[in-house]
Image 1 (tube, rainbow, N blue to C red):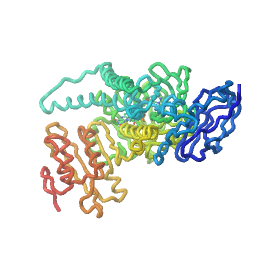
Image 2 (image 1 turned 90 degrees about the vertical axis):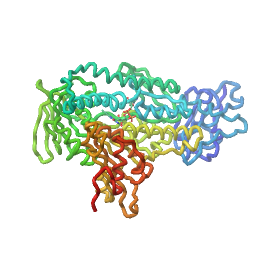
Image 3 (image 1 turned 180 degrees about the horizontal axis):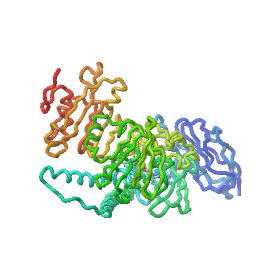
Image 4 (image 1 turned 120 degrees about the vertical axis):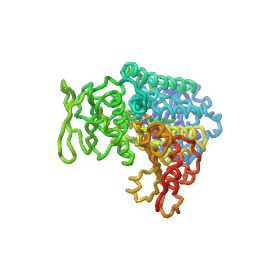
Length: 611
Ligand code: FAD
């Protein structure tokens, strides 16, 4: 046995670097190339591996110390001859570096071979760990794997896909489709086609929804395999800046088994999403549900209360109403679907008023009790008035809260706001340079398509930095707009500046509006109540050729149509660009070109404009 000093190897261009993490302690047995400490410069963080195997006798550095090539890190007790044998490759393993700086290339040491990228990565189990497999998580994992990284995806549930695929976007749309068909069939009587009253088989309906989910989540599992992404089932929590502990889970839920493993990684993308907010005073009763409970379709209540008049609540209300439930909705703000322009919402309100017994606006839900007859709920108007109701089912749809506080982020030094959000920059990087965050956990809008785009950015930055590809490392989230859609009946979709925002911000806009009552296709389809509205920059500096700033559509398939408006905004199109783009006739999409023509001054499908 002999004692030898383990020193900082050649670390490239770095003069002095700070010790930010001690990965071993006296008494630990270490392997050759096992990481000993993490150091960080203003450009990179690196793990310094051991050149020999042995037992740590004494640490010669502490946190915050500055070290450079040749600094002694620790005294290692090694087997006899090893002390005098040539040192094993001991290049520092560079982790994620800032985009401004290229990754420090392993440099030639005078007495040791150049460490291959493979050798540099051996101290870590994976290049990238992605925590959470929702639209953000799986997209990040798959993009990173496509770019050549060794990726592990950690998910607590048996199925991949997160909220969106399992209990969000997809199951709600599977049910909304059925609701839309029911509604349409009921209106066909006026066109001379009568159906009998529908009979419901809720079991079959649930099976339809489950099948749709299964196809998608099964597809994700298969695609993970094809990409050689390791999927680890379990609950992940940080135990260090480069380590997550995964406790295995089982069953359909997330029951923890107690079986734990530590997974190490060079970089991490946190994609742990959000969960429904529960009002503290609501009784614990199966008749009080959140969106997940409502999607389970436990039955069709006679009457149902929706607490929260936002998109999720009203989508679920549409489903239950089509199946036969009467609805009340209570909302604290002065209108339903906050965020959308009121003219869009007005069309929806007119077409939906028959579903509701009461629409309580500027009203708080203040108490609730479970009784044999139903859930009794008390309301308080912002004007001080009080009222109450009794319901067979109460849906809480008052928003979602991020899961940032549930992953021991502090163990990795990741800052989490009081509300549970993780702050990130345009590259989706947290305050810890090699840890990124995406999706619902980084903020509003909590939408799947935002999560996916953020995922691609984070994965490209990580891959670019680890693989030394500056064109990828420069990726950033620079989308101008993120569309919003309520998949209600009719659908509402909007993107970019709304008319209300333009007014509040003092931005002069020129509006082009095309009512669907002038659209041949809308009339043929029996959906002429909708309209398409585009807003163009009308400030003096735009010189009368202002670019499109926003748009809103209400009507059937509005969600499918709004993508074109988003593209026009991204491309900086003006009214002529859009109006002169030939849209196929007769389509609902045509209404976008026609709205642009209207904004430009002459739309030959509308009466002449005056003035
Ligand atoms: P999530 O989808 O929430 O996924 C996070 C994943 O991380 C989950 O699978 C979770 O189990 C896992 N996880 C969390 N913590 C851990 C841990 N510690 N260890 C292991 N795994 C963990 N958005 C739209 O764009 N369009 C829609 O039509 C739409 N409809 C919706 C309808 C409903 C009813 C709901 C509730 C949401 C809807 N959304 C919709 C929102 C959308 O679902 C979310 O914005 C999206 O799922 C966010 O993706 P994410 O990847 O950030 O997180």
